[in-house]
Image 1 (cartoon, each protein chain N blue to C red):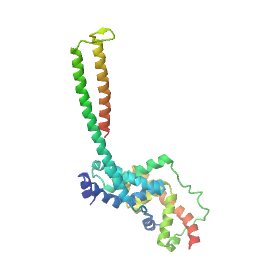
Image 2 (cartoon, helix red, strand yellow; image 1 turned 30 degrees about the vertical axis):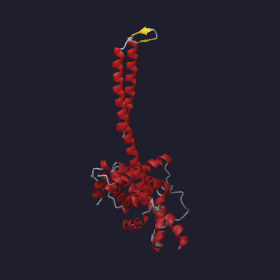
Image 3 (cartoon, rainbow over the protein chains, first blue to last red; image 1 turned 90 degrees about the vertical axis):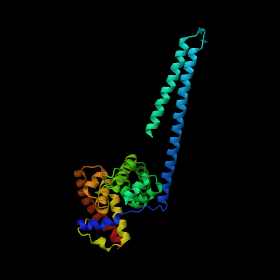
Image 4 (tube, helix red, strand yellow; image 1 turned 90 degrees about the horizontal axis):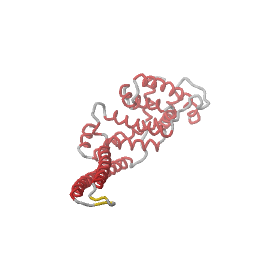
Length: 107
Length: 185
């Protein structure tokens, strides 16, 4: 089989996509993807907003609790209660912060 | 021309991407068919490849032709698909109980659409790597360096595969076409 001959035959090997609306399908899929990405970014922005609001409120609440004299389970003005509250706040913030960072940088 | 449309798409003109779809869809489909050997899967692969190309267009540095970069995506997507379903290669020894012939004159007697049918049928029976490399080299007229870039293979692997593909093509051609075409002519 000669090289030229093979090349001639191979010119007949091009195939065509038989779907007449293939181009439209691809463009629609791209637009859908773009729209969903936009909405994901919108959600991420809102998540950051509420995270920062939560952070601010947590700091305010921690500061306020420190200035009040209150008791819990028979223990008065306990630093333990305050410490527990702070731990909960920090734990929530840290885990949410981690999730937000991941989702933001994945996008 | 490609550069102009790439710039348009990057600048936010999504509709400009239609140029690439209309320009490259058939060759992408042809290459994908070489690998996946199934029309429906190949169509899905091409659509997915266009989506990926669109999403990653900003990463395209222009060091190679757009087509080379895009066909690499098509080949990678196709390979991903056949890995999922398990590759099927043709067994050259078991196909058709025909006597080998040395002349190739039979193809000259075939009509255009018959030629197309038989050539594609033969390519469909070749292993994915071989039909892919044959189409890239002879149909898309890529050189060895470009084929290396598209497939991710070494130069020696491309050359060896091309050599083997030519031989197997001839072998299948003489076995398959001679017998099938004889009944048709």
